Each structure stands twice: as C-alpha cells, then as structure tokens.
Length: 271
Image (cartoon, rainbow, N blue to C red):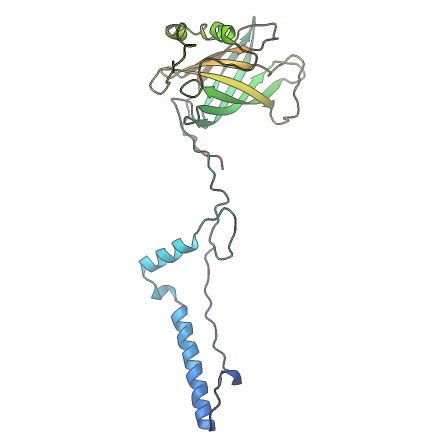
C-alpha cells in the first residue's frame, strides 16, 4: 500500500509559553514558538511537489526493505522468504514440461503422463508427478511424486541403493543402445559422464508417495517401491526407461514417453 503522510497541526498551549515580565512579551513568545513549530512541520513533512524524481526513488527504495524475520508497519511489501529454488533446463527437461506415452508390462500397456515440476542442474536433480491409468481396478488412475537423479558429476551410473547393485545396474543400462560405449568403463574410478553437451541424458526416477494422499503406501496390483532407469534423448525429446523392483515378478517394464509441444513456456520457482 502507498503510504500517506499527514501534516501535524501545531497546537499552542500555555505550556509553550515562556515566563515573561509583561503580557506583550508573553504573547510575542507564544507566537514565536508557534511559528517555530510550524516551520519544523513544514521542514520535516515533504509533499510530492517538493520531491524530485531522484529523491522519490530513493525514498521508495529505502521503504521497500525486505525482511526475513520481521514485518515493519511502514514497509510497502515484505519478502516472506529469501530462500528460492531457481529452475534450470536441459533440453525439454524444465519446469512445466510434459511427457506422455505408455508403460508396457508384458502384453499390457498403460497410459502415462509425466509432469516435470522442478529441475536443478547444479544439484543434478529434478522432480515431478507420474500419472498412470488402468493399472488397478480399485484405482483406475494413480499419481505419484518422484524425484530424479541426473547421471553426471554428482551421481554416477552406479546406484548403490534401492536394492540395486552393479550387476543390476549393468543389466538395465545396457538395454539402452546409447549406453554401449560406456558399458566397460561406467564402473571405473574416475569415470564421469557429463550430460551438458551430450545428446543422451541418463537418470534415475524414484517414486516416493501417492498424490494427493501420501499416507497410502500399499496398493494391490501396483507398486512404487522400485525406481526407473531413464534415458532422455535431446534430439528427439523422447524418454525411455525400465522399471526395477527386486521383488517384482515382471522384469524390465518399459516406459516410452514423448514430449508435448507447448505454446507457452512454463517457468516458475518454489519459495
């Protein structure tokens, strides 16, 4: 809100008068003090006409001080947080991006929609929602929140968690033809894959919970205890992946996704 300044009306009381020998002197002292107060009011109170453009900008800038811990009454606005999660992008991997396709399980396929919510190349991570239809009769449509690791300087091809060891990693990564040049070196010390200028971006997507009810952790006929080995090709904007869960009877469930071209670019940041 724009602030308003209200000039104070000078009031003269007997307390403003100095003690003088005569009434004339007393009246003169009263008038002098009143004039002085009026002068001070006029000096301290500036109207828009008294300010030039530079002074006005300076005043506004001083009043728009952001604060993380306090709200002052005279502030025009307050930044409630100094913590931001800036978005970045890598090809079609950006906040607001959508991929659609199918997941094949044996002879059955299911419709899948993936919405990317956040990409942080500095941390080599991304997150979003994965929606799948027709997986169970009880829940004809399921949506999970997932977080992804982008293989690169921070995350290697070796998973080392989620019950996946080197043999499992090798068996799944080698199903991507583009991985063939790295099959013999991906587990060597010192090998680092840099996806910045590569056509192929490798990732792991781990589903964490259902949306909107995160308390549901078990559904008959569906499982999100495993994770996806993902390969995204920048030149075609296509994603392929394979689902792994150690106790799952159906191995190598394949994910096939294509990027949805958008008329507008979705870009925002979490605060």
